[in-house]
Length: 189
Image: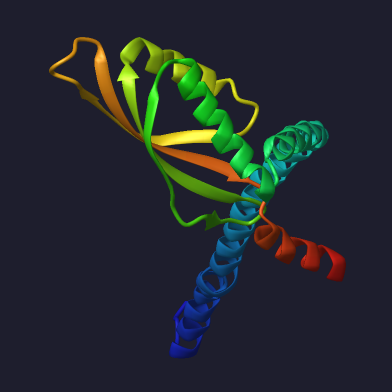
């Protein structure tokens, strides 16, 4: 039995067919399947995250209600612009009640924000430290929103227990200028 070239070519072609099918068909298809499985895993993990997020949506409604109540409480504590002088008078009375002397009260330019304005007030108080401490406690108990971003205490070296305090007091109030843009946008919506 003799093999001729034609039979040899036929045998080589027959053996090349499975190799070519693997390289051209099966291998790319396996890569596509692996990529599809990876994509499925990614989508399943995103779906799991979405399920976790949707479980907490009912809690978000309750949280929004709580935060709305807190915002309403803070808005009640914001005095109107015309009441700022009343607050300054309250600070003056508190200082007098604790036997402190107000050397200076200077208001700076108001800082306008979205729904409110902040009025920085520089105050210089002189007196007994114990009275000043009580003054700070009573100032904190005021119904209005105030903050004290800066305070400098200077001890009087001549008299024991005496001091001078330089305070930057910020009073928040509902400003007509700050309220106008939000009302205009609410009315237009």
